[in-house]
Amino acid sequence: MSTQPVPFKRTEVPLPVFAGPPPQAPLPPATQSSWVTYRAQINFGLAMLAYLMVLVGSITLIQANSDAGWRYYIAALPLVPALIALFVFVRSLTRLDDLQARIQLLAFGSSLGATALLTFGYGFLEGVGMPHLPPAYVLPLMAILWGLATAFFTWRYKWRYRR
Image (cartoon, rainbow, N blue to C red; front, side, top):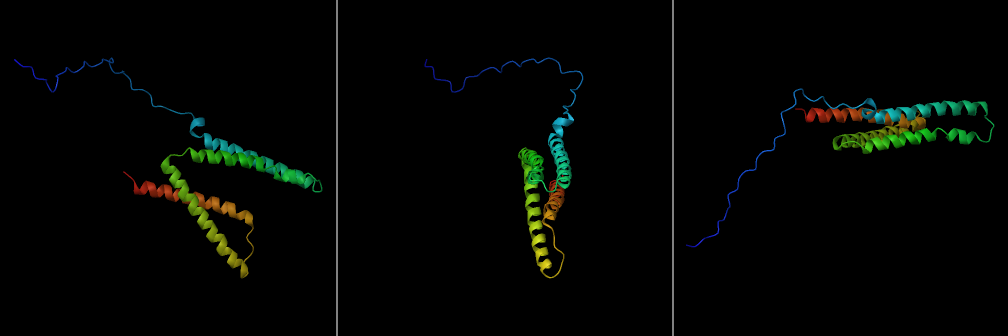
């Protein structure tokens, strides 16, 4: 009698591990505090509040001492909280998920291009008699267009991929 090798060896299924009965009451949903949820917005708001406070203080100090030699240093002082706001803003951009980062990239690119076209086109109109546009209006225009573009691209993704 020859014994031939068996190609498959039959094994038994392991016994299931008993984890106990299911809990009687459902677990409460995971909640986060307002600080964790809105940390970037709170930090940015605090940085903007500091910027406005330092700006008002520096303008008041410069107007009271218009001939002082240190007025240039005081005039540059609001840049410190503005740099903090920029740091908070960039940090919050790096923490976005892929879709939100794409929306922000499209919105920023669109607002940059639209601002460039509007200011460049208005430069031609200034040559034929329109009033001069101060450069301080460019950044608020870009921010407004960025907000509009963010709303548009968010709406577009929600509309396109609705379920």
